[in-house]
Length: 408
Image (cartoon, rainbow, N blue to C red; front, side, top):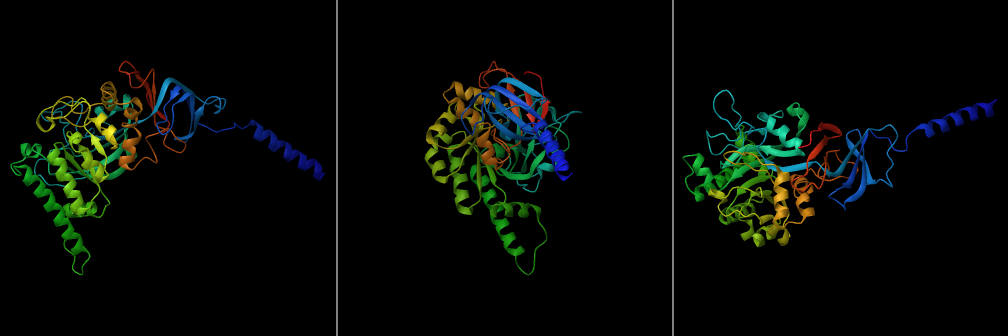
């Protein structure tokens, strides 16, 4: 009797395990080429996705797709694109600050120094410009208060899938945004010169240093949100993202970083090709302006091939969508990377500059930026070479969810 019961349960378990798929998955993606970015491209590749995460990736000959699992197919598959600096969700698609439609909320001009402004209080996750960028493969953005003030406010990191702010934000406080150069003087009566801009930024850091020292004393001062925010910069909890275009402004940013020891994100850096030794010696990367940025003003000496020169110098860089004072307010990083390839950047470097490198700079490479097991299933499916202008992004997945399926 015992032998009969044992055989019954043993046989039942064998039948149960035989019926289970070898690899559980919610869906699968097949690509003629899967660009993992972190490794070599995989021809005839497969990505298995489970619970919004990448479960396994490899060639079709080694990764079995379980029966009954939905399959998306494409000529090429890349990680979701990561925009290292934009203002989308603050600057909107209609480019209007008048009348009934006002969608330019990226720069508060009541004061040139306002580090206390929180990006999370103003971000619009359903802004049509966010949806447009998403349809072209942008799945993660670093956005917030824009350039043009000594300290314009804080930034955040979010997925572009829409919904509430709480649903999409990965990091409420990503950095504090600052700007050096004459563009600040165009927006405010004071500061009026480059030296005054740097002086005001330095004063803010000194005041924060004094504030945090007093906070450790017996008699604490009243709470000051501006000083509190900049104290986080001094403590290393928040990077200071400094937009500096000319060689002189870049040099000032590097001096400030050396003086106060904060973590520096160098943004824009139009003349970084003149400062490669200094930037490399400082051990920082560059959040580079869009390849096709219009030259003029702060960008007078911007070059199409700056990314190529940074790559040759061994300096990490990510290509951003940026911000312009008129249409297009925000560019599409896929197009900017394509343009960089046509002026000499290697295709693998260009793809890395809009995926894994920005993820590493932003400190989120454990989740996004490459196609690896355990990371978020953020994928873009193309009908051809992703760095060819005639190719379309036909499907976009964010954490395994199909969020766009129109070839654009």
